[in-house]
Image: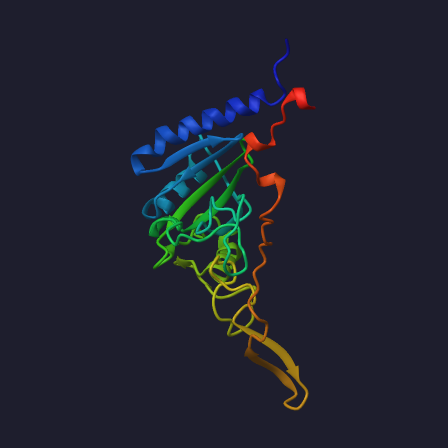
Length: 239
């Protein structure tokens, strides 16, 4: 019986995960090998040290940073679609907020880096959590120069600061933009709207005139799809 086509790749990734655990466990790193992908979670204080070793040491040789982005985990694991009934107030949303679903203060924001080893033909992921009250981590531009624009995007969209970055300023939003639009608590309608004023012959900014809307549809309360399984089962003798 022939081996699966990806068995060699799986073995190499498993070996990579074991090497990472052996080399960096004492630095407080956590290594995960799931769905054919290797992820290492690194304490912010150790980021530059671990990143440099991942680039330079012979067992890793991840010479290329192919992507870096911010992540907001404040709604992670929650779904307003998973429900069988709705409240009888407001817009009839299926799930009522408990106010206690958010992550811990140091687990809301993270920076995720995707690395490529040309020498070994392998990829892996780094993740670093930052404190939500002061989201700051050291810039990896000193390790991979390609991180410069990626870190500017994470700063612009999530408000994550990168210490030591040479030119940390907004890159996607407009001048004077208020807030960080990829944060989960940023309003879908934004804070301001803009239009061209023909009398002033320039663009003007004004408070948002769109009323807040609930985008989650109402749940149909009287529907046999939400009946108990026992009530849906039919006696075969009656069929």
